Amino acid sequence: MGITVVKRNGQREQYDANKINLAIEHASAGLDDNITWVTQIASELELTLFDGITTQQLDEAVIQVALQNVKDDPAFDTVAARLLLKTIYKRVLGDYETAEELKELHRAHFAANVTRGVDEQLLDPRLTELFDLDVLSAALEPAHDELLKYIGVVTLNNRYGIKGRNGDALEVPQYFWMRIAMGLSLNEANPTEHAIKFYEKMSKLEYLAAGSTLVNAGTIYPQLANCFVMEMQDDMEHIAKTTRDVMWLTKGTGGIGLSVTKLRAQGSPIRSNNTTSTGPIPFMHTIDSILR
Image (tube, rainbow, N blue to C red; front, side, top):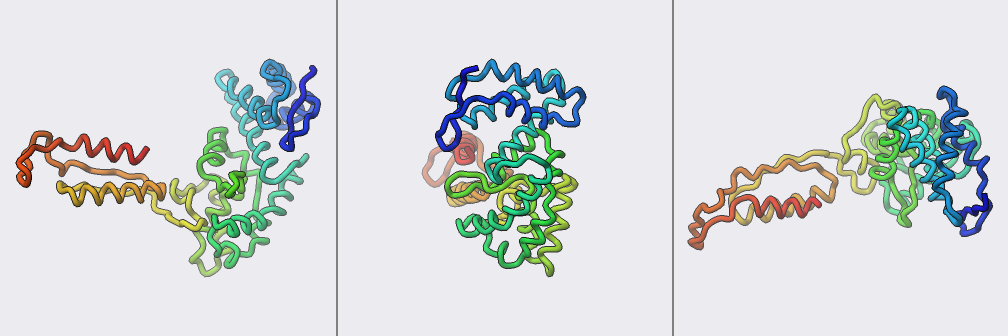
């Protein structure tokens, strides 16, 4: 097959089917008859290839081939999740061959990634001041990533993982869990000890914090509250204040429940200017536009 692949540095190399087959084989390890898995995914992948495909496009193509077969066998979800995890590991930590090498990469890069996050004013400076990063890195267990379904890996990476100022990912899943654990342990007497306890619970999916906590814990904007209930009063000053409050809460990733039942109905008289009210619907449209 005369297909070349464009690497991240712009160089081209010949498409190596054996390399892809090996990645699929690793992703299907432990599943019944994994040779069949490799053959099926590899053969379907070849239908999507073209000359000049980038390594990122190739990674995505393999994952999509696995996903399109989930309807026939849910185990394909496991394959897709593992393939996606491998691409995340490669981008954040670098190449590896074995599970032991992956664990060593996790531990070797953790402190530097936290420090970079602090230097780029993304993470709370106390993460480097209050915690023993070497102890925390030794507690990292990448094998816990096996607990995540594909949609969990996607959501974690796209929605919650910290990105550098240049847009590249700073966190693999276990860094993400540890960052949350550190953010929740800042005020403890022994922050490192408590962070490990939090981490062990979360990385095993035995406890999961709310969405805003997952986004903000450990960052320079540690807004941890997740849901807010508000009531809009029937006067212009309070309507304007509520609109402003919704904007600020939305910026902080807070979920909002807003009652507008106090607003007068459409056609109700407005005594101050002798007109009638438009009712709550236009104000609800305004709030809806803000939330989008």
